[in-house]
Amino acid sequence: MSLSYRQPGVILTDRRFTVPLDHADPDGEAIELYAREAVASDKAGQELPWLLYLQGGPGFGANRFVGRQAWLDRALKDYRVLLLDQRGTGSSTPATRQTLPLRGGPAEQAEYLTRFRADSIVRDCEAVRREVTGGAPWTVLGQSFGGFCTVSYLSLAPEGLATAVITGGLPSLHAHADDVYRAAFPRIERKVTAHYARYPQDVERARRIADHLLSHDVVLPNGYRFTVEAFQSLGLMLGASEGSHRLHHLLEDAFVRTPGGPELSDAFQEQAQSLLSYAGHPLYALVHESIYGQDVRPTAWAAERVRAEFPQFDAAKALVGDAPVLFTGETVHPWMFEADPALRPLRETAALLAARTDWRPLYDPSRLAANEVPVAAAIYHDDMYVDAAHSLETARAVRGLRTWVTDEFEHDGLRAGAPRVLDRLLALTRDEV
Image (cartoon, rainbow, N blue to C red; front, side):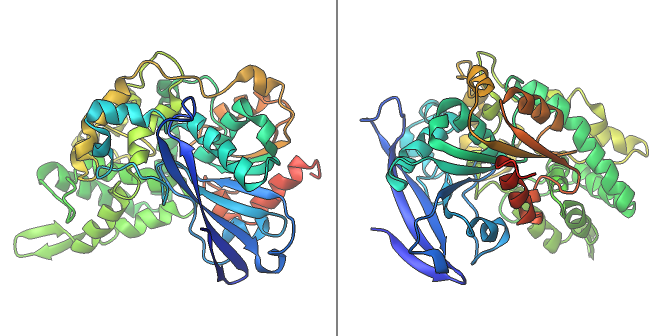
C-alpha cells in the first residue's frame, strides 16, 4: 500500500516495486525498488507528465529533499516527479557487507553484483514506467552516473522516453577504464593546483598531515586505517562547487598539542571519517570501475594502475623535496578494501569484479546515431569527474543531442545552479534556446 504525506508545497508518496534480479529471467529471483513520488500540492489532482530522476553514483539513493528544494521546485511546475532509488541503493533491496553474505561467498556475491549496472537499471525503469504511467513515455533527468544510465536508456529502450536531460553525465561510448583515468589524473592535478592557488597556506598544512601519516599508524574512531593515500583521496571534494572551501576548512585545524606531542585532532578525524567511509554507499566502491567495462578486457583496478603513471601523486616523493602533496579524486583503489571496515569483508568480491572479462556493452552507437528522442546535456567545461572531451565526442555521436557547455558550474551544477540549469536544458529539448 502506498503512503502519502505532505511537506511544504509538495505531496509525497512512497512507492515500492518488484522487479526481476535478472531481466533475462523474469520468473526468477525478484528484488524490491523504492521510489518517492512528488507532486506540487496545488497540482495533485491534475494529469501531469512524469519525470524520472536518476541519481549520480553509482551506489547512491535519490535525493531526500525537504519540500521543494533545488531543481525539484522547477520540475514540479510541469511534472509529477519520481525519485528512484536505483537497485542496491537507498531503500531498495540493499547490497552491503551485511546483506551480500546472503548470496554466499565472494564468487556468488560478485556474480550477483554484475546485475547492478546501467543496463539492469534501465530495465528496472521500464518495468516501473509501465506500472506508473500506464505505458506512456516519460522524461528522464540523469545526473552524473544517472546520465550514463540515460545514455544506456537511449540505447536499449528509447521508446520509453519522451525527453532526456543529462547533467554532467555524458560517458564515453568506447573508452576503457584505463582511458578514463588517464584523462582524469591531469584534470585532478589542475583542480589541486587551483585549490593551492586559492589557499596557499594549505600547501604546508597538507604536507604536515601527510608527513604525520607516513610516520604514524592512525586509526580513525570507526576503525578506518587512515593512511596518506586515504588522506589524498579527500580531494574528491574538489570536483564540487564548494569543495575547495570545504577542504580548506578541514585542513586548517588538523592538529592539537597533547602531552605526547602534536596529534591529529578528534574533530579532524571525525570529519575525515565521515568523508572517507563507504558504510552508507558501499556499492559505489564495488561497482565503480565496472561502469566502464564493455568488453573482454578486465578493469583490473584501473585507477590504481594508471596512478602509477603519474609519479607526482606519490606523497612520499613530494615530501623529499618541496613539492606540494597532490590530492586525488574520484578513484577507487584496492587499499580501500583494507582500510575501510565497511568494505573489508568485501575485498575478495571486489577483486573478482576487477578481474571479470565478460562485460556486456552498455551503449549502442548505431541506435544512438539514429536517435529520435529530444535530448539535451549540460557539459561542465573542466568537470573533475567526467571528461569534457569524452562527453563532447559522445554528444556528436547522438543524433539530435543539444549541449550546453559551461564553466559557470562544477559537476554539481544541477544543485548549485538550480533551477536555472534544468530550465535551460528543458528549453533546449524544445528548441527554445
